[in-house]
Image (tube, rainbow, N blue to C red; front, side, top):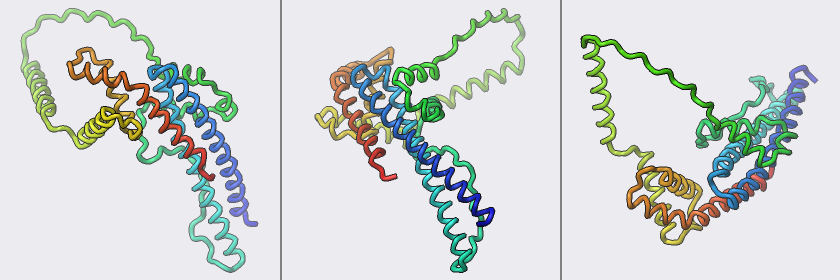
Length: 278
């Protein structure tokens, strides 16, 4: 056995061990997500909604890590097979040596997490398997609170009084630049919405139409999230229009059923991850 082949076999054993650890972490996150989703259904969206979002992010990262290790294991095994054929004289020597670098976490394509949610997901997955396996929901909630806790701002000193001065040419240029910025901002606000915004509005309209026609069970995951965001946005709006008030009342009555649909979709997703033949 050559030195290169011995190193490859050692790397393969390491990758296989890391793969098993990643699968165990994935199973632990799925279990935590199921429990958090149950608590959210009982205790409401406000406390557990963001925690569920963070665990969903951890779930996606864990799944990406598992599939990444699987890919590296396949590459390593294929290179070992090619080396064996070359040693037996039944095949050419592989032209490029397999470099078994340490696998790095990847974010799945299309996975769009806000930076704070991504930080929470990475923090959860950064724990040891023993700690992650024994993690309680209350500890997850504490971690979540610490992550989003903002330090109190120090009191700002009162600005010193400005001395009177003669308006200079620099003052006039600054004033003109400010007017130009305000003019550009006003023009942008009058532009038609972007494609992404038009698509978001269409998804929300379709989702509300399904809810109003009693077809909550046909909502998909994106529509459910859009409706919940819409309800929360109206709730936090200080000046509500009559339409806002009516929509808030309608969504508020149906919010438990909508959240149950979200839980159902999450359970199906978790079952898909659990049932995957690793």
